[in-house]
Image 1 (tube, rainbow, N blue to C red):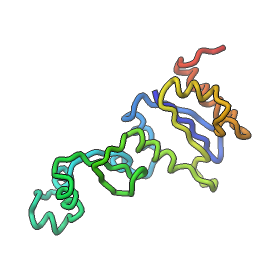
Image 2: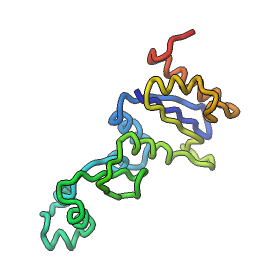
Image 3: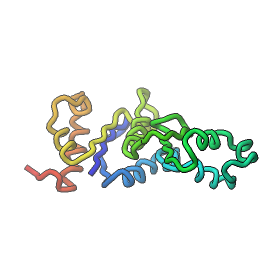
Length: 170
């Protein structure tokens, strides 16, 4: 499982979990202004052209959608292209793989602000496995838990681990 601890500027820290990357994406998108396909997507140049009703290689497609045609020319019509607006530039497609987990973590981290803006987070942590989350509760190094008031974030994570029977009550 994947565990997330969010510390808002106002209010109490809370922890939540996701079973896997796709579940994480479905939960991240709920509080995000972007669509799920903007946070993470895979496609091909052929599929992009099809979505806009164009045939590959036609002068009309080249004129109307030069960016998509450039992707097709450079990487081929059927090469997998990755989009992750928070991990890459907005609207950028690339052939280098971006994992759904990295895209979701970048989206979560984009919510962290220095200024206390409504809905923004002061801090966030993602733990990618049960053992990593359990070890985090025992760590004396993470400022999320060691800073003044950090015990609240630690408590939120610990409560989530207990609720899911990852930790046993002492």
